[in-house]
Image 1 (cartoon, rainbow, N blue to C red):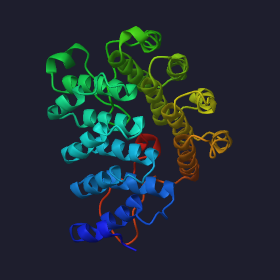
Image 2: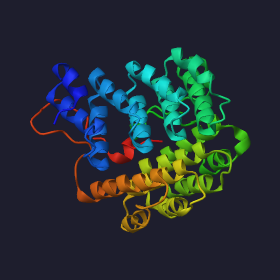
Image 3: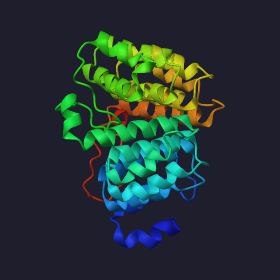
Image 4: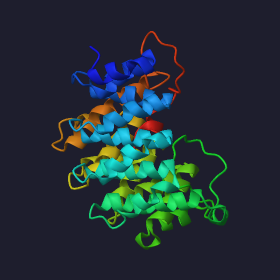
Length: 335
């Protein structure tokens, strides 16, 4: 059954948009969470104004889970469409939303990188919600970097990357060795921007030594849940088996912040080594809803990674609209 929202807009949408909207908005409440994820990333692949409209509607659905809203905010940033700015600003400002959602809205504004959002981000750099405040600091640095050739020249980003994500900070190219990057990563006095640039540089190196350096940073940091969760996201992108022990320990740590455990769960689903299924299954009834839902999604990601499926996103039957749906969940699931 088509919901009222779609009925108002369907004349402007392709059949693909309409079907994906039904799944993502889930007005009847009968679409399983993993299917909603797959539909969401299909809309992200379409990356047009109609997709932004649908995803923006999902972000403002008060009845939805915090996990799904945060994933929705992430997708809006990755699409880099300025039409998403108003809904992201509203989400960032909404103190009733989970820290994860507000952080993701701010990070997505940084990903879109329009200078017009600088005054909005500046409002929250000292916010009592620390993940939000930390994100705004990094997003402001990213916008400054993106729009200054002089700053870029001091430490240029790599000319190319094997990863398709729009990152909150570009990898540093000034520091080359894993040992030096690890020192910066693990130094709380270095500042988040510099630590993030070292983090993404270690991702680009991609060796087991780099993975273990990232794992040490994730497990020893005591200063920023945002920082720890970003390393979890990177592990999901890298899909390196050497990250599994640290991710499993973090997921099992009930004293860790939910946003960090969530990212550990989804990274495990992306790595998808044989032991991961059993690790995730232990937490599908976790008392923390964000962790519980993340494990459900991660098990679906595990199934995808081990099934030989070509793509994670889905294209509804009966429509040939071109979609960039080859994105793997490891490159799609959010920070």
